[in-house]
Image 1 (cartoon, rainbow, N blue to C red):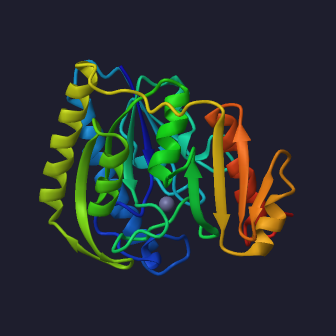
Image 2: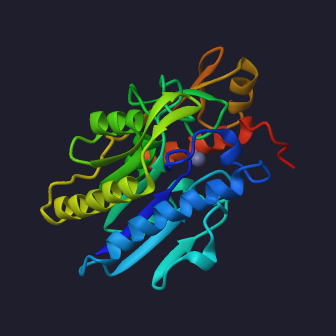
Image 3: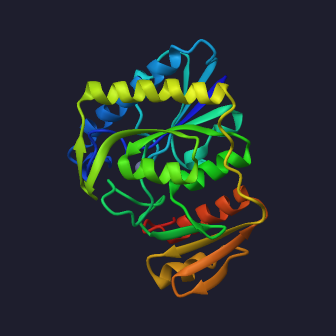
Length: 276
Ligand SMILES: [Zn+2]
């Protein structure tokens, strides 16, 4: 069994605000330690399962160079670095089953730690009419390749969002959001126990064929609402993009993956960072 992990950072226990999340910020190195602790717990649990033959970890946060390569256990493969065509989903096409670790709720969720959808300029994404965050978007890309998501970890709001979308997925709640920048945390040992139990349950469900890939019918309609009309103007540089209203554009993907590429193009076009 080939297991693939997409590891984000906002949904890691101990993380509650921006200063822990971005390189150069005061508490980033501490945040990174929290990230590695949680990853080691999940990898440790996976390694106890005899039928797990391969583990691929995709660094899925910000510039995607957060995970410390020299602390990756033997036998595990790490995908490190940005500018990957599938972004948070890089490497999943080779896997049998996917895990989302350290994930967070979609943009606009109340009392959810660092809620957003891929980037700050994205106000809302609808996929075939349904509002989705990173969980829905990435589960849909995984579904395109026939890969089911077995486990997802993050705060209570993330877990609720995931269960509504993927009823069979195992959710591991590692903190409870109080506001966007505060949460009730559990001890490190309680967090580890929760993750250990989650991995075991998730693999049992996968072996029992209880998990289904999240398949979005084609063509897939992506509706993207940006923060400003200027961003929507720039999004229109993407071939095939249509204007819905001042801040909203839409794209009809021949497949959900085709639409994901257009969505990612919109993000590149609307990024605050200079393109050149
Ligand atoms: Zn992130």
